Image (cartoon, rainbow, N blue to C red; front, side, top):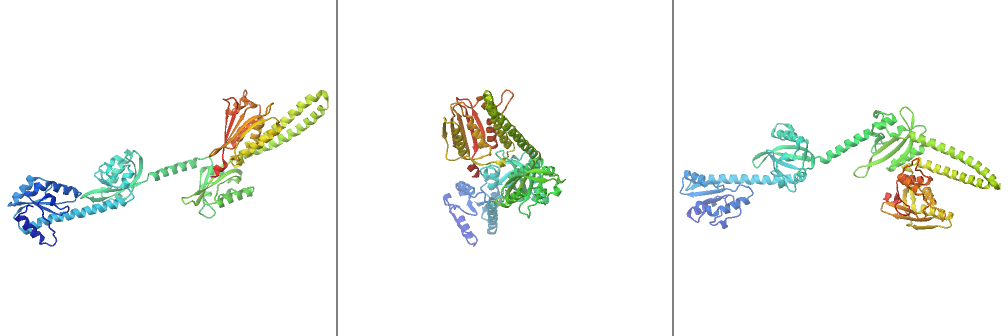
Length: 581
């Protein structure tokens, strides 16, 4: 107020009350930064208008009252002045002189409103702090519009800051499938007597980045800035829903699987089964009601091999995977060969909680293998006996000059037939081969032995080797004789001319064989490379098929390059030391 008698009287009078602290000023720059009520007169109002506006803006929406005094004005004149001024900076106008009790009551009314505003602002601040500390996304919604969101909510809906989501219609984050459900949730919140307003309701939503969300929403009514609004808690169930969908998919896949699948609880005594699929019921004949709660050993019978059982028991005790072929018995007592795989399942801490079992009926395969094995032994036995007879007669013919040449041809053919017999034995081993037959073999050592055998047969040889000291690989036992046969095939009339390289890569070992003498038949190589024989295109020798199949059974790859001048055969094998890592 201007430095006049009215200001002095008013200041002295207000200062006489112990609850009031009074500051006086006449210039805008002298106005204090903090105050509860600003009392001014008409003479200074225009001068401090902008300062008042700046103070109000700085107060962050907290009520900052202003009382205008009009000298020598009646109550009616002050009301007219307030109406004519129509200024948002004025909260009350009084005419002076005025009865002290009335004036104090007007001032107290403004102070009371100020204290209420401060209390509300403090509660609002505390509310926001509490909401920000809440890890779950929270929204304040007023008539469908988001008026406040915490950081967790802005992150969930792919907005960088909470301010980026405030003022947005909540419906923008709901697709057609979830719109009706969300309307029901908001309606239930509006009905304070409805118990559903505190229950979580699941519905699909979508983020600002069009990312599909699956959430659970619950809400209550709150009063915020003097208005009733809906406070929503939004729980992100997206990952849980995805896991649930995957589990449902896995469950359907397990039920539809042709092989038997079981789950045993490793945390209970004797590891009882807690799950068995329909494939297990079909293979064993045992329904789930006769399976659950029992150890899987009920499938064993009088001719089940004890060593195989001990191998399974030892693997379970050591909590390591195991794969065996075991003779089991169906519910009706008929035996069957079960190709069993048992895998331990760990929890987040690394403790084994369950064992997953896979059962496959390989009875027919076992019978075929047994029949082939018997047939192989019989054929090779009979073939060797007949070849021995032929060799005896050939030896007798050699003693006669006129039949010596014919006898030599007969003896050579007999030796070749015996060689074929040995190759048939190798084929039989490959037919019965299984992943469990893989072992660790040194590729360099196998090549060394094959080259040594070739050099012993051929006095003239040109073999160039480039190999490390060792190259351990995972391979089938037939790989070494197959590689030896391949190296032997490169022998020509002038002697073998070979380049052999072994390179060790991070996960594989690569063997490259280059036939520089042209001893390998290109037609045979083309047939093996295409993996198909026809009546017009077939191998003259079985060794190349043996090589391909041995590489395949070793989980390796074989490639034949005939584009250049010399045939190049490249084989890749899995490193044994890399697998161990």
